Image 1 (tube, rainbow, N blue to C red):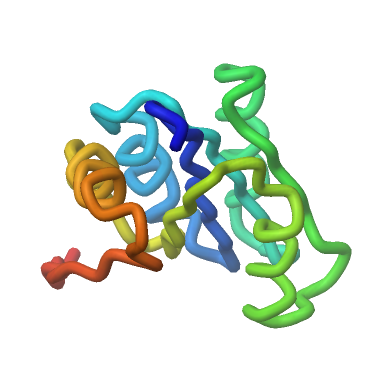
Image 2 (image 1 turned 180 degrees about the horizontal axis):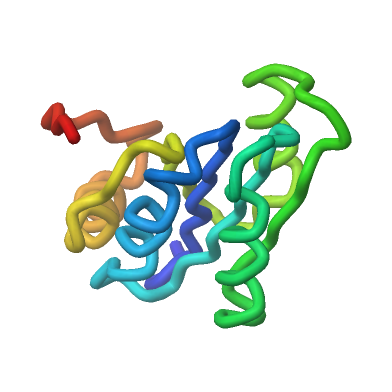
Length: 129
C-alpha cells in the first residue's frame, strides 16, 4: 500500500459563489498535503466560474476545473469531477461545505490503519451564515 496516496477533493457547484472561497480555502488548508482539487461548475450565473478560474491560475497544477455548457443537474456535475480524479481516495465536498484542517489527515490515518476499509464516515457540524 502506498505510504502517502493522492486524495482527490471533488467540489461540484451551482451558484454558490458566496460560499465558494471558504470551501476552496478549507481544501487548500489541509494538513495532509498530497491532494488534488477538482471543481466542476454547472453553468452558474453568479461569480462562481470567475472564482474557479482565479484559484486555478493561482495554484497551477493543484486544480482541475470544468464548466458545463448548461445546468445538467447534480449527478452529471458530480460525474464530471469523478471522471478526471487521479487520487486513490476521494472526498466529496459540496461548494457550501468546509473541511476542518486535519480532516483528510485524520481520515487517511484510519484508512491506512485498516486497509480493508471501504470508506470512512464521520460526524458533521451544521454552521449557519
